[in-house]
Length: 477
Ligand SMILES: Nc1ncnc2c1ncn2[C@@H]1O[C@H](COP(=O)(O)OP(=O)(O)O)[C@@H](O)[C@H]1O
Ligand SMILES: C[C@@](O)(CCOP(=O)(O)O)CC(=O)O
Image (cartoon, rainbow, N blue to C red):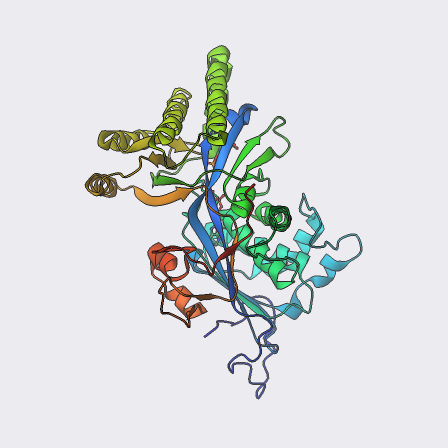
């Protein structure tokens, strides 16, 4: 049963006899889902801080958002985000619609918004005060960030006649590990709201790439607004990768401005092992370390950064060349070697960590792929490009060691689809004689156990490959 207790600052307007709790009648829309991927930096982290280009790509870890329209009489908006234990409901009629619709403030779905409006943020704040009031401040902040992201988007895109809705979100992306979890949820929320106000066309299979890219750009722009609510000053890379999927090259020539982001629409799908050290780290501290090194040894550091730049350039050329075939072991080897070199250069910059080196050692010992740290380093995650056809026993042995030593391990794919839509939320689960399909409701979604349970229930990839009911805006050249 949908959860709609009001815990916001709205008064619950229930009157006896209204039958508000009866089964929903004629919902305005079918229950639907959207999903968006996380990301890793594949080449060029840190060098990008010093003006060089870097490459980021989507991964198959994803967030999934189920949107349930309530019956007309239920005028509430509820968030149910169990990954962070957030559950909150607002009364639609109590929200500050007026502030967001005054002349000069009103934004439309096609607008480009590059900064948050402080007056609108202030108008929203009283409605965030009642989010998880009894929890410790650090947890409350996480809850309020996610709620702020949603509310700013709802108030910007919606209107007082917005239908009562329930948003249930689950993600398979570790939170705060540099894998773009916040961007992934921002893309889901922006995509869902744009679909609810019926401003997107498709996705459908015969949609031209140009039209698909326009829809994705619309989602991406609003996802960036959502990211600003969580992060203040995001680079825009994570939300771009999460909306359009595949890969991007990004470069910052002026660090005060967002980077230039060039899509790699044909970035190949590659098998990737992602290992989380579970060692917390601060991006700012790692960036500062490289800054200090550059001050002390300007020539040496600059040549390391230049070498990283050459590696990124080489990888772009390799993956973009006609001869690159992701099924060809030689091509994978060439790309893997570039990852190994990139990691070595990052080690020389001083941003690795013994736990990252241990992952590399264990993988190298089995000889099953090429490993580098990803993101800021100093902890966080490592990625390994896997050799084709790694023997099961070797993989199992590595998994056991990683597990024993307290690492988190995900077998993922690099270069996946961006935002996907499951409309209505019905899946066939790849069973041929399953004609009816399985309807996903909130209970099933909430009860799916762990990452495996979520992927098994609603994953964009089933055991038998892609699940066709999930639709994507096709962007390839
Ligand atoms: N699954 C989720 N459910 C709800 N909120 C989430 C989820 N994943 C991320 N967030 C929001 O994004 C924030 C994480 O952002 P950040 O620390 O930058 O991590 P990341 O590097 O993974 O993006 C969380 O504090 C939370 O507000
Ligand atoms: C080190 C750096 O290049 C990447 C940091 O990545 P992350 O915070 O680990 O996602 C910093 C940056 O680009 O802002």
